[in-house]
Length: 92
Image 1: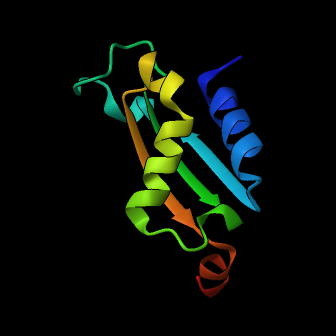
Image 2: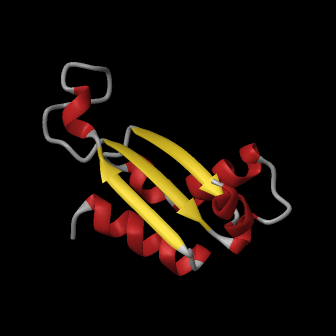
């Protein structure tokens, strides 16, 4: 199973998102710190979930980071996050 699939699986199980977009951006970071040429190190994630209701931006990001702790212990080096409630996503 790829890192992208594991990220999608973990976030779906914990957050029951209305929308989840996971993009592997590793190819854009070749030569940067944390990129060893093998890929699956840099991801962009946008998640819309009711679980974010009442949480500030930092708490939302902390929640996602905690859910992906095992990935960070492995190859994951960087995660660009956009975390929204369904109401915030509707305004967008």
